[in-house]
Length: 468
Image 1 (cartoon, helix red, strand yellow):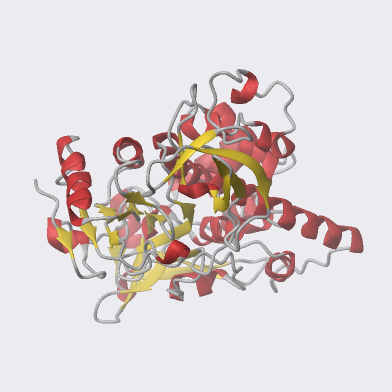
Image 2 (cartoon, rainbow, N blue to C red):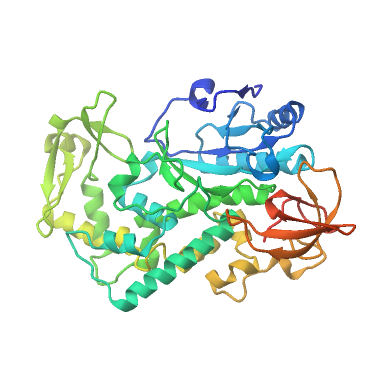
């Protein structure tokens, strides 16, 4: 299928390719912003994606933010590649294909200035606690985390030492995301924290790093910079997928389980015999509906009842006993509901006891699971060792003859430049977007340039896009 470029920046991939919107699906999608120096070069890029077999899985559309600002590139021709919703495994393959095409065309009119990568995840993959944990892992603020922990049902009063620990964790995690996404906060990727989980689905402010999809039933992560590397692009998919999995209670039980709590067998029996609590929402006519967040099964107001917790007073909604009987299930008791709550209390939003995501436990999960190979490979770089604290972590920089990262003495060309080979002299202060700046030299002529504009052409460079 031919990929046609859409002039409308609000073009909808679902409408164009005939995909239905389904917020309860278990799918993800990606937006990859790219710019091109001419229509012919943009068309060649789109044709390359078609030849790789992805013509029916994405569209290209206009985006006015692409390529602007740096070097006055107001004439940049944008091509924001937007995928259809797909399973994470397929999305990773798609990201690799786009990354391969970007690598092949890095010196053929590609412009990445002002370009980012946004990854969407279906609403149905989150429950309220995992949604809070995911958002709070990106929008880091010790004051907002403390406010969340001080919810009425169980107030939390931190000590002076805990306040210090919260601040330290927030600072470290922001540095970690800088290193993962190859830039700091930008004007359109501000890591602003949320006050409550109910605020998140209502937020579509495109200056935030994590928001609800503007025109789709998704949540959107907007922290990444467009790279010239299939490896890095695939690692972005790994980052979102792994953080989502780690944010689920089932993914944390192994790490944070309290042996004093009700036995796993007892919890399994309760879950097998009863039906999970329903989420409450509205349909397109603004009627209240209740639904199973895992299966999408819906019930109207006349088909549900509630059970009130004995110890906390909150209420959860469940299908009527007559409906449950037909399913071979029964109504949960208030005592059982409290047991389930206590079982998951340490792995819920309150589980972020360090002020945000427990970073070292998260990185241990990524490196040991085997499910996120591209992100795990990147974590082997020396720049991540302060977060991991694992001496034996492999360092790809050990072989100096063959390398990926930019360093003093590297030879580079500048994207959409005149083809001159420049030498990196000295890394200087970062740009306002948190991208490392370098002083470059070409036959005695010097200039300063951020590394996202480099095309790595050292002898021994393993890819055209580097890493620092």
